[in-house]
Length: 165
Image 1 (cartoon, helix red, strand yellow):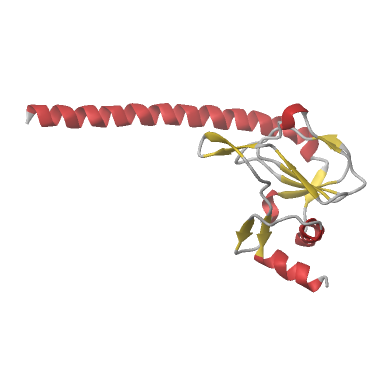
Image 2: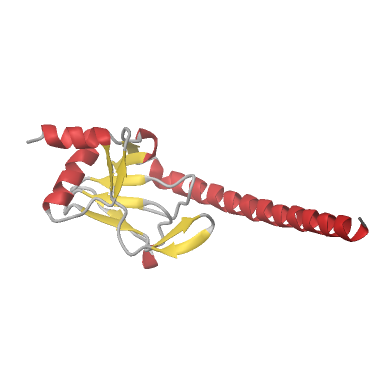
């Protein structure tokens, strides 16, 4: 059993070391994200929670201008992450679990940093029914490049849009 037991112990030790490394990386990432959230508090205070009808209006305008819905969510509009800008400010980088979806009314100006460093935030412009998001996203700890904008529709938003006719 010596050879078999040695291999089992080696595999277990290797797994444990990998887990320690992953836990360390995860902790470092969460600490960085928390610092970014603290920095973002400077502009988040100029926002309020979005109402589903506000996103419905944006999505209707976006689709009327040939925009495409890229993600269907069979559930309600997630209020906890959606905000509306109430005054001018510059948005900063935020990553999961702190990122936000920001609706910007036509009379508000929100600055986007150089190189689109806004993390996983998405900005939905009412002025021209456009979306701004970083060309990069963080999916399962790997940075990927998007080849499209992520534009979701939720089942309750569909109902609101159809009622606007």
